[in-house]
Length: 443
Image (cartoon, rainbow, N blue to C red; front, side, top):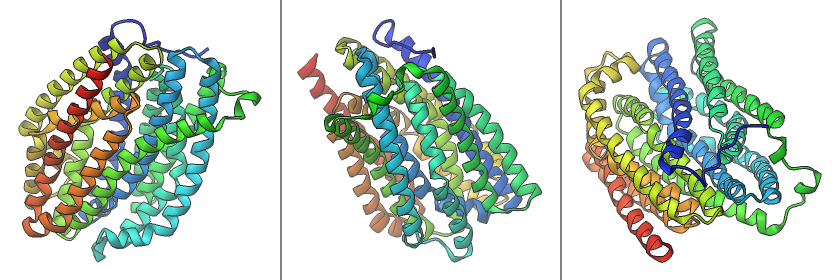
């Protein structure tokens, strides 16, 4: 029998931290092999390869965020059934999760293979990096199934409180990705395609290992023959919460695609600087994301058990921790941003260095707001408040469109600098007000 964690009893903060630590380490390893991609590209293929990866990063992020968001939504229903000790619904919700993922993988892969060229046109990819960008994103789209498998199996394990096993497989995958990066690019001279193939194969390894472990150690939560006959109500419940959570994240990324198109017009130097800075931001945001995922599972289990008092205490403490990390991260960036950028890219361009450092320092001044934003988005989704989190994603989309159409063309790189921090602050205020309304009605 596999390990589980019942979050309906015990100290809320300790449970959330205990659950989020392996999530953080796992997310950190995922970012490490993304950084390795960038480093291998920069040191062996040049700044143009970094620009090609960065120019298409919004598309890959859109796909990954939508699929991981859907699986996070599905796992909320699984965690609620686990918290309520409803064995029948637990098994059936796992069955629904598998069915929905199969169909979504087929549909999304087909759509992306048809639309990839028009999307690259929307992104205004510079001619000098277009072929590299196309090769990279095409391989990522073809290998989408590997991303889905890991997100699905890891989501099931995390819903019942096991966040350590997905971590173990992510560490193995990270090592495999680094080895494959070096093998494909340095020794086999496969260029940017080698980086994409390495990432896809590494993700396939993590998905396969996680699935095998789930099959061997968690038979008691997996559906039998009778649990595959699902009611329309359960399928609709699973689909809507998964779709809304995936939509919330993907709407944000649609805005990023449009914004990336405006950034790409600014030239290769700006694209390279933006890509390097985003890699560092993605690394530093992992504590926020880990705590947000842990809060989602905690809220799901305790909502299923009717323990609303525990939800209130957990959110207060988790948001406090997020603010503390935001302040510490800001100090770290102001102290070491130059060293980080240089080590990641290997660039010799002073302009790239200056642009990336400026980008980081402006964004990290507003980092505490981002921590609260991510925590409350996940918590409100787990509480069944689907609309407002998606609306904040819609607000972000609209503001990024306005920035791409007006602010960035007129202000250039400075328009890029201030768009996201302003969005973070506005959406955080909206989510705080939404939570306070829910709190007054229910507690």
